[in-house]
Length: 242
Image: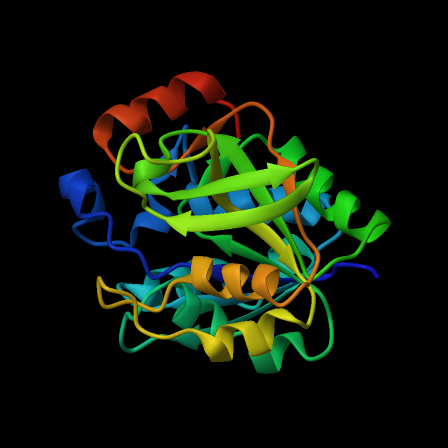
């Protein structure tokens, strides 16, 4: 099962970045001179993905104007506007018609990771397709989603568990590959206690219904570029490279 399509959720505001997001969405903040979202696109192009749908909202026209039809990247780009922000599950659900029966990369448009991870996760899925191959990394699960594993198979995922309650150190990274089973899973999601439709609930539904959900451990750089400090650390890690 080849992976040629990606749905990138790129409606984030980035309030903690202050003036850097005064006239653009968080995914368009430059890191070492290149917008975060462009770094993601470049990484996925290197992994063979050539069809992209951007889910946009806040300052979304900035993204559409910058990327256009995708010809500069030898790819096809389309856009869908998310007029109301209701969480990550609601955002990914916009990609259903675009995906059709194909597997897709589902990614957050404001997460930076080492460029080799894109080829790694796509290749892993193509070698052994499953309902969901979830990129995982070692970071603070209390601000992400805590994951437990049995070998490589995921056994649980919990959104933002209270500090000290997680059963393991693995966090959902914001980069995954999904098979068609993700769509009924997304349809099942109900509003969470914090008033959002959580992508983690869709993944938990897959696990509960016996679908194969595996973890893919990311290597090297991972950053949500969410604060000036995180942005500075990402700049230093990339060393000014494009």
